[in-house]
Amino acid sequence: MGSRPKSRATFRWSRLAPRRTRIFVTYMPPLDPESIADHSHRTAVIASAVAAMEGADPQRAAFLALFHDSQVTGDQTAALPGPLADVVGSAVAEYEARDSAESVCARDADKLECLLQAVEYREQGNRHTQAWVDTSLASLKTASAKRLAEEALRRGPLAWMHRAREEKPEL
Image (tube, rainbow, N blue to C red):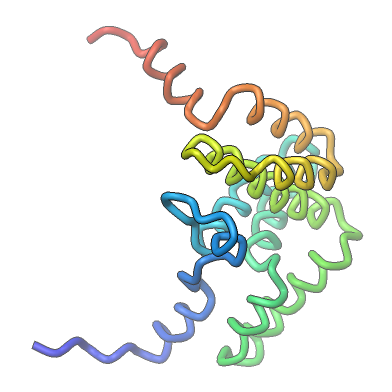
């Protein structure tokens, strides 16, 4: 049986959430590289946490983080209807201007997510991530993002799982 053709809406959504691999992966190949969509999703989750910790609007910060990569976003919006392209374009403009608390939190989330990826790749055996960690740390602006980065570097990527196992009550 043949596959169903993609609907116009599915095609448009796939442009908003691409599965392309991020560029640094070609220079430091990890065992399990993240896609741009993976990065954007994790950045949005982190942005909401940083914004909540900073007293900013977590929903707005997460929204800005979803569309924070202006080069990719330009490709994504090319086939979208005008009103939707405008919403995404205004989010990119706000993110790039960095004149709102939410845009600062979203940018910190992007840098923090990169730091987390570097730590995870280092755990997988990649020895070339320290410059990436250092650059990410130096880029952080909010106190909350700096605290989260310090914890991530101190604990490692799987500390939460080990702690959850230790605290799990007996059944």
